[in-house]
Image 1: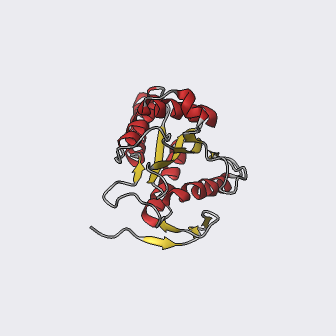
Image 2: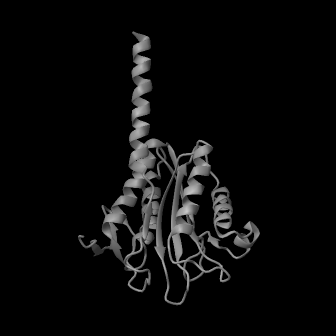
Image 3: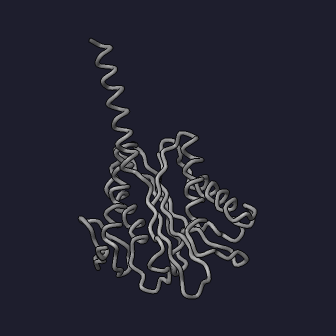
Amino acid sequence: MPRKKIVNINQINGNNLTEKNYDFHIQYLEKGIRLIDSMSRRHSKVLQERVDLRYPKTVKSDGSNADFSCTLQNYTKDLTRKKVDVQYFARREQSSQSDNPHLHVAILVDGNKRRCRKTLLEQMEKHWANTLKISVEEVHAKKLVYPCNHDPDGNPRPNGYMLERNAIDFNDTREAMIRQLSYLTKHDPTDTTPSSTRKFFISQFQKDEDRAIAIRRHYADKKRNEEK
């Protein structure tokens, strides 16, 4: 199996990355950028939000990704049933000081149907609580779905962005989204996740984009045939 390429860069295609000097898993960074661009092609507005999934000290993970996978799947199914296009990019990490792993997540949704990041956060709290079989109140009080709205020094920062296709700040907002997502692709040599355990979770955005293109073509062809 080929070794995954890790590079030390502070820009990619002219876009600034995280403020600190990190090495990045380049193939995942590039895939994350493709995810952002795929969503912006499908929707005139795209809302991106960052959250972290954490375990309470009273719950011990079994070491697998089952809890994370279950939560992401149920969360996306919930929004999909409500006719909201949702995608995610996630990264598992574990500190040597913790018995449990945590999950960094970037959520991207159709910004025409969801404009409030607080609502997306609350929905994730509900599904994480269901997975852990604890109350939503406990998840919220202990910030087990952490909104990532402060930097490591405690300074406030945005936990998400709204990308509008025709806005004059489109390129600046896209760069901010890339910078936010790039943190999930950093190489952390202190991560104690076993090498045999999956670290990255990415929704099938290309499959969804291809389906959307096929549907648009179908209705365009139908309209042309009706006009003949």
